[in-house]
Image 1 (spheres, helix red, strand yellow):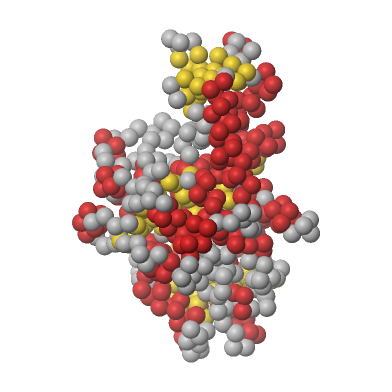
Image 2 (cartoon, rainbow, N blue to C red):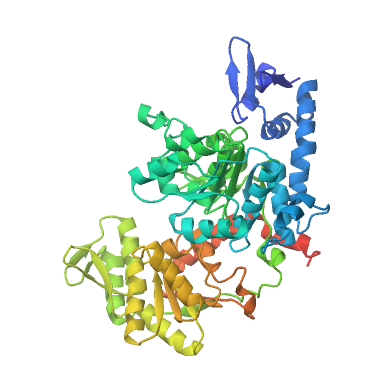
Length: 581
């Protein structure tokens, strides 16, 4: 009979020899040869997995039973209840006192989110983009501060474009009583800034990598330099918040492991992302490990138990979805950690999103000639010979030729040129829209710049949001658009998919979509968010070049959407919240 109990702040497990293979499946399990017993992290996840492994055969010791009951009663049950609630069932006088006399107030669903974070302290806030997650986090910090809890110093990690335009402004608006420091500038300047502690420090992801040690992962060996404490580690943050936390989904990158090193020492660990899954369940592990490393100690065992996999054409393992045999166990573990309310339920006053409209943009003869040569022979004659050395390079070139004509510049690089069927169609769409504003998005900066050049020639006021613009220039483009001084904003998905508001438009044109469904969803929500209630409906238009790789991309993105829905379960939540409709 397997038996488990608490000893030295771990769960110890004694089993018969024939059960050894089952214990080995437990994430974080290790065998003590001297004591002849197994042990695992003391966590709710370990408790549920043990029960899943042994069923009713498992005997639970008195101390572990008391610990798990207390965890269930004080954290797990209330957090699970609040996972998708729209309103609190009880008054929240502390929050009322904080908001009294202030200009900004939370919506009911945001008040639930504050209570969820207060109950959890280690959680993922995954409400869709544009639902006001930053206001929730700021009120959470104020709540803890009002109780004189050790919430400061707090660190907010975010994309570089959001440091000033979003977080500095939001903190000044929602919590002017906080002292705030935005880390920016050269490496020496950043180090000096980190010597001056504020209540809240705002820093971008790339800088965390440069000013923090790295946490370990798997068999990756850390050098002495990577293990050494740096400026961020010396501060001792009590709260760490990661905005757009999906940027930390790749555990092998130094950036992700630097985030872990900072988060794991904090008392309060909050991840914020409206798109927690880009491809499959594996994307979720690094985010969960950041907030609860004891619950999710090893990605390999996480995937082994909870993921459905297959061997792909190249002999590697491909994650398909959630293992149906352990589906209930998976959600029982992760549901208390993740709050997500679909936008349609949280903000019912927002306009409906119409079915996606597709516009076919057949290639010009010049584009088609280049496309066909590259597809057939992996080479093409432009103004010079261009060869694709491998299939990935070929795919990149085909995507370029599907969008526009091309030539090789003096530096030997491919440059998109006119004519472009997509730019021609964009002009046609603007004529169809009359004077209505439009947001245009694409992967390729060159395609965006081709469109801008055409608009300049036609004297149509427009602005750019690309990697070539400074943060100030991007902010100016957004402001001028929102104020009605320009009609069109053209943005790359890399620069414009996160943290900006373009709600003056109710129409977005995707000239190209990213292979990352995260970027596509984030981009759509630039016009579909708080502020878009002024419109009757939201229109998403996608240009597709028939007979090209773009048709294959549509199928791949459709599959990714299904995998994301399997995890976030928005449709199930909506049916529950809307009374089964």
